[in-house]
Image (cartoon, rainbow over the protein chains, first blue to last red):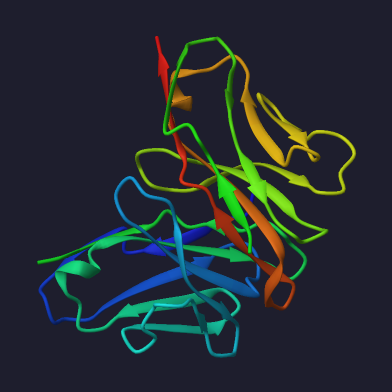
Amino acid sequence: GAVVSQHPSWVICKSGTSVKIECRSLDFQATTMFWYRQFPKQSLMLMATSNEGSKATYEQGVEKDKFLINHASLTLSTLTVTSAHPEDSSFYICSASGRLADTQYFGPGTRLTVL
Amino acid sequence: AQKITQTQPGMFVQEKEAVTLDCTYDTSDPSYGLFWYKQPSSGEMIFLIYQGSYDQQNATEGRYSLNFQKARKSANLVISASQLGDSAMYFCAMRGLSYSGAGSYQLTFGKGTKLSVIP
């Protein structure tokens, strides 16, 4: 199957700082990338959908000014958590799908801990 | 609106035996797709199997098979000959007509079932 990478795999930061998470499709062109958030022992919650070259579409209740998403190329999307607070601590997972593919391929996830 | 229900928060199975993980769904879309993903403790989401709503036959992928009963709106995952490495969270997901653009669709996930394989 297609390979999606995420970097970093984990990050610890102080409250008030910004954190950038990268999501890359390694062997296919990702027309669309999705960003999910997962709290412990819960399911994945879609935060936003980004298409290459256009603005991301955010789900209801997700602050677009806090979670900045950029999808500048067909292989890279970034999620920046701005002015992170302890309640932003979570597991963030990206997924990617190509132009002809129905399946979303997921990255390994990034565990964010805000102190 | 689409909804996925997984009623089993946790399941135990003896190694080498088969296990069925339940998934029911609700949608008004005439065309949809159903997925199963495995999430081990490492956190990555591993795609297991896909069933399209118009597929005539149940999907199979190695030890995984999907028992698709369209009239009952169920899409249960069957794992045969369970292995210790199968211990993980399993998520059922549905792709519907509402799409994000450029041919890609959003997924709705169930709450998951934690499978534990006993030696």
